[in-house]
Structures are given as structure tokens and as C-alpha cells.
Image (cartoon, rainbow, N blue to C red):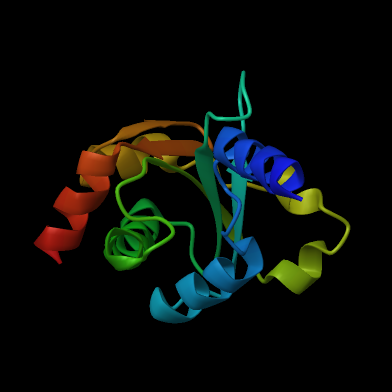
Length: 144
């Protein structure tokens, strides 16, 4: 029994996301940030212990100023949230509601405004992706 528990502990440590409920975090995030919905993914690029936190924001308006406001609200939530706090975030914005993309096509529908959004809020934005370091997230949360 001890060997089984030890193996489970090692697997949890290696994957790094043993206790995060992505759907719960996404639901809380969408409500707190006043989004139409959200999808939160923990990805593991290059190794199981590398965590990359990806947030898909479902929004009404993809004008850069409006998306910047959405990003700021996401930052406030993420900075205070036990699952996301202290982590860099990769953000995508999709106009509409998650239900409209039940086939997974939201991945192809991200708005190409993140370069302009990064000029407003900071971080590294190009086309449909905005990458915020943990310090960017904290800075934006404090500014709100």
C-alpha cells in the first residue's frame, strides 16, 4: 500500500496539476471577470512538470480596448486565485459564448488583436496570443 501511495505522489509531483479542477477555475474566472465564458487549460510543454496555464476568454467585443479591459479583470482574478496566482498566463480571446463552439472550433476563432492589446496592458502579444508573466499579472491586478 505504501508503494502505491508513493508512486501516486511521484506522478502528482511530476504532472504538477494534481488538484486543479480546470472547469471549476474556468467557471469562477468567467463569473469574476464578467466574461461570456472561459476555458482554462493546464498544458505540459516539453515535460510533465512544466505547467503552462492557458485561458480562453469568451467575450462580446474584440476591440483592443475592450479586450484589454477583459484581460485586466482576468488578471485581478488570477492574482488572487489559489490555482492561478503566481503563474504566467497565455490568453486568447474569442467572440461569442462557449456553447457556440461545442465542436472545439474556438481554437480556430481567436481574435487577432492581442498584439494591440499588449501595447495597452503589456506582456507579449502577437496575433491571437497574449503571454503575461506572473509579474505582469500581479502588476495589472494592482493597477485595477
